[in-house]
Length: 228
Image (cartoon, rainbow, N blue to C red; front, side, top):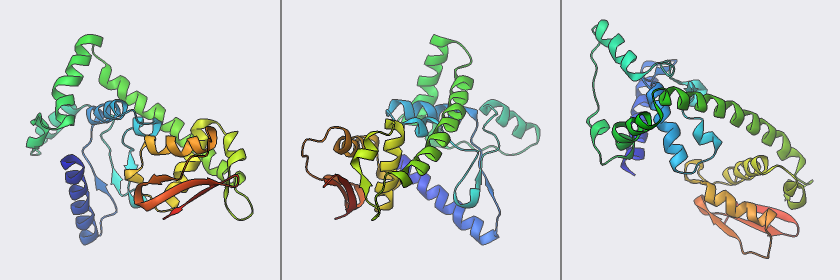
């Protein structure tokens, strides 16, 4: 949608500026409030724990993008700018109710704070950090498990995948699907659930079509994932 397209355009412009100036890092102004909104958006989409972990303090190639204000609330960041006479620019899209994040910011979060009391933003930001720690641990486990569930030719063995904990198995499957050519940003939980059913609910299903013209099929006790 337009929000994702605008975000891609912003990062493309930042990348170009960083390359032009030989910048070691790009500092972004995301605050604790932005982090809370990101967690709620992930929760509303029914996303996994990685989405609930919100924004990382450093991301991008070689950690180029840094978010030094994730522990500060938006008002504190704004006041700090005003005290130092640093101009503050407000994106008009942030108050446009046509956009989901804007509605969440001006309607959703205030309603939650009214119902649950102050501290919702802090709790959501804390949830993001706890989720990130858990997601990192599961990703490490999945990377180690992946080597043990492949045969000599590198094919994934369904019987070995079956005995893995679901959270680990789905991470192994996601890595395999992305390696086969599926764009990570277009791969959603529903896709992985269908692939997972080839392991846990096998009834002779046909191949599963995935983003990037990738397909997954069960064949001779192996899970074959490749571009069609």
